[in-house]
Image (cartoon, rainbow, N blue to C red):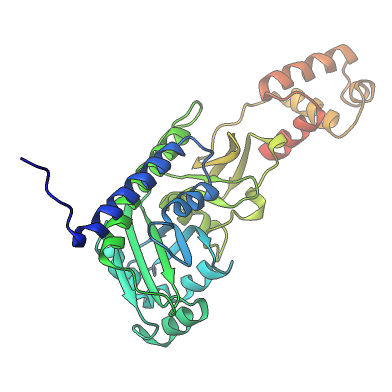
Length: 332
């Protein structure tokens, strides 16, 4: 039996399937590249020839409840203003399109027009030229938050069509799967544990991932914090890592995780306890006093001061006077 002839009406579907296959191969080939906002940006640029768009927005959001409106906690974007996420957080409770995507997980929802959801959303849509929108929202396992990707076109462009929506749905499923797998590899690596109260950030403090428990805890400690960038007190230079910061009744540990910062929130750990004399010697030495001056002040021999300092270095896990001072200050 001869093979069936291609029908002209099948050509768009065949082209879309071929294009999607190429996009997915490129996406999976990039899976081992460094994790961060630029990784997602490159992944969406890979999709752009198949599903053209003018602007894009992605990240993590909470769906909201009776006590809290929907909020975007972490995001990246292409072609949008830096203020976009903060602006959306002010009006998110009125965004019916966003609520529709959260209510139809895994489905590419589409919308066209500026004036479908009240004056606040209309003004936001016109200001950023979001005439045509298409979005997919998916659960992000273990986080308590949703993962979303939104694409936009201006009013001079055609609306997103059904073939583009189907390709976008499939692509987002693969994108989320790779993103989640990479997150788990980092969060469950040596020296880390899985569970609630985690975040990853770039060295600048830009949030790459966080879970809902972490977001809510930070918002409680830093009034008005809405995500996107870590509060400045939490951003630590690499040479001062790992660090443990005490906030309220808990401790926040900041450690290096490749090129990223890994943050974990939990109960206050018990710090290694120095004996009173060891601590007194360590404090004076960190303040810049010599062995001889410390010995005279505490009625000790210089050899005893040296022994106390050696033991303090070992017990606190520090290597020099700068680290000693930082650890003593951190432990209070």
